[in-house]
Image 1 (cartoon, one colour):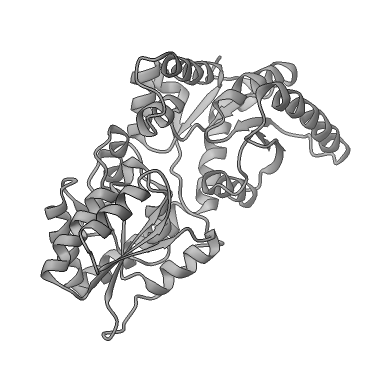
Image 2 (cartoon, helix red, strand yellow):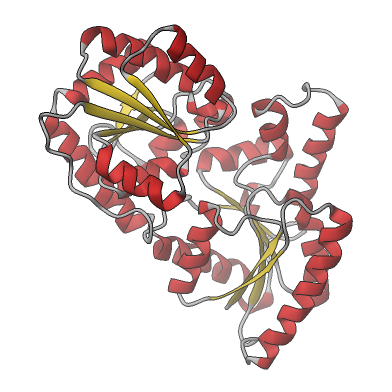
Length: 376
């Protein structure tokens, strides 16, 4: 089986980096037909066609063309599904689309670039619908996200399979818990400060925690949409227990979390999207052997169990988050259980090879003997 990653994507983005590695470990041939994400369609489409034709010749010369082949359009590449479909019709290779998120929701709801109901909002929703319609198989990172695609865009449920995001085992290594009573208890949030992350909730919880226990220190790693507001809130409140580390390179981030974190925070946002996603950072922190505290959501409950392999906060409420942080800070035994079991779970079920095998299983079941159940 050969799988072409096809489109204007970032090769280092964790989702497709994990999938490419997982598919290779599971025995699939992985090829890339990629252009810069910044290219406009009038340039990217001809480039993609040319690079695919060149790759096809290389594939045939290398005698790698035996067995079934697929086109996989990675995350955020809705605009590349139509050209992938043209290639599909010319080569009889099904199109697998891994959106990870709706373009409309990301640009209009999350980033609020244009108001709901505007021409831009309708245009982005139309791009989503077209990509979903043209794909032969759609991947969703959670069952909750699958349900959203079905309800919001009218995608038939049988056209979607759930494939969690997992983690990259080359980067996120299991580490023992920190045992240094002379250092502060370090709570780390890392991420791109999306609205679904709920940085405002964490900042307020840091204020409440600081009033009760000065030994707890919050460190924010990363930057993004809500970063300026979070930093301003912390400065305005004069929080001495909060530090902003800024953006770190991926490998350095993993080392920093491994060395410094006693507890890692997940997401606490109030958006509808918060309820549907389990971001990379949760799987990554667990794989590093860290206890994770996050909002209880339908998506998170698909994979994890409270006080067994994760700690759930019942509401995106700073007071509830404060109580959860202090409970974990004061119960080393509970932290050790959650960290150990969480690490064991994600390393067994959500490592790259396991996800690669899961995807190959889906493809074999749906497209065996050339029969597509997905349809266009």
